[in-house]
Length: 309
Image (cartoon, rainbow, N blue to C red):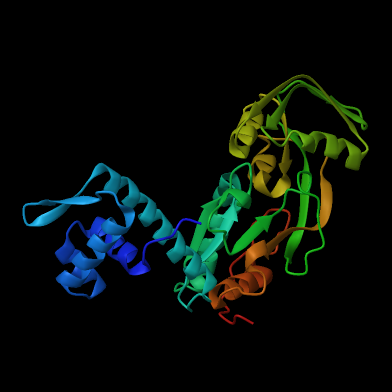
């Protein structure tokens, strides 16, 4: 195994790169100029490579020095981030939660605005999860929202807090060519969210109905899928609570109705955070349970209580 240089020399090198001078690095570390300079030269001697050269009254990093400095910076940033996640968050730590962009715009941001009326001192950090979900987020969020039961079947989760039933089914603009005979929904175009095409097979299997389309098109984001359906471009699978306004106005119709998943809408801690949520995350989780259960409209009036339970 390659022998690493002393940690103190790497800390000094990290401070030099961040501040730009030995004097500023010494001030940042609370050490003397000579002590930091000694550590820097120790690192260079250990590496056997010129990492810096004298430039006027200061030091200038060489190309090798800059390249290694970026590695050191990333490593220390990862250490700081990992250690921050390891420690139990303080009482004023923000709560991070992973949601999709469409869900955030339609449901979650209005819900957070109501939470902030009750708890203005607690910050909720919204982290957008892409097609891979929370797996692509680093560091992981404190909490996850889950509702797409046609894409992710319900699982027993002792840490999940149910927020109500979720209804999911095909929706389309009334002017889009379609027919429904009580058993088969037939239309001109099927609109998929790329990577979630399986929801149509799952809908047919669970509903007992059939779906047929002359052609298939796809988009990267749910918002684009729902908007294309609203514009009469085809049929999309959607949760009722995210398109409730369009259904109420008649911009979308659901000829085959919706499948209902009991307690299919829930919030839960991220897998790596179970059992060690911060005080603020627990307060938010309890508030969601008491104030954000999902009716068919997806809109719940605010409640004034500040009791975290």
